[in-house]
Image (tube, rainbow, N blue to C red; front, side, top):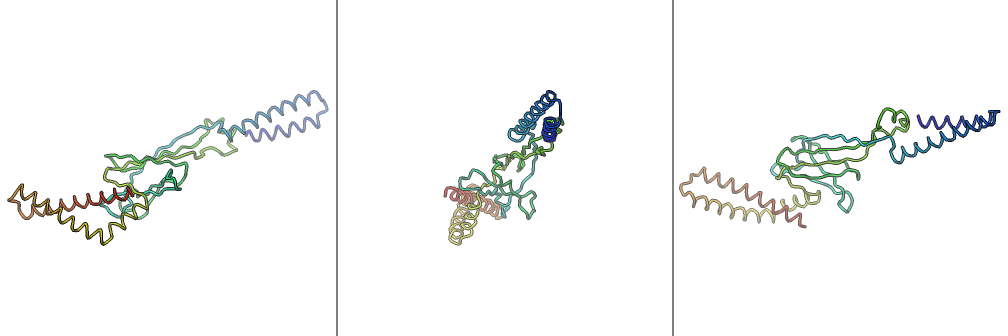
Length: 241
């Protein structure tokens, strides 16, 4: 509406100054309309540059997330850095356990992300901020500019359990390549055998009457423990470069 008012003031000032025969009245009305033009122009600039008549409104949504890692035994949050300074990251995740399609946080410089550890549900809390008109009156005057519901910024807080590993896409590729190499698998097979034998011997020393089923249970637990420790050591090695 304020743009229409400006246009009408310009037309009115021209008509009054050119066509009114009473010069005193013509000058007064023209000066008044010029004042209206100036005030309108100031508020149009303030609305466009300083967002006058608008205020920030933030909406919050929560989404349960699942690991995008192909390994169910090793849940992982993978991120891709934008640029070379690693100031902005895009995090990749799934929205259901069996989903084939992955999702990611918005790849914009106005999007920031924070990763926090939790004992609760793995989730992403998204806060989006928009500029909205402060009232119907402001919308009436500035609505023609259509700058209401204007996106400002977004912040994601990603809550992950302690068993999740956070790696870059490059680190994830290195981890997969290293873990699948024959040299690493051969080395780990020997080390795992020695570790399991040590755990079984310790258990049998503590309880010489262990049954075969009990020994098998010790072997399974020792195998799982060694695999977890070996993977954690490998992840630490890759993170350290």
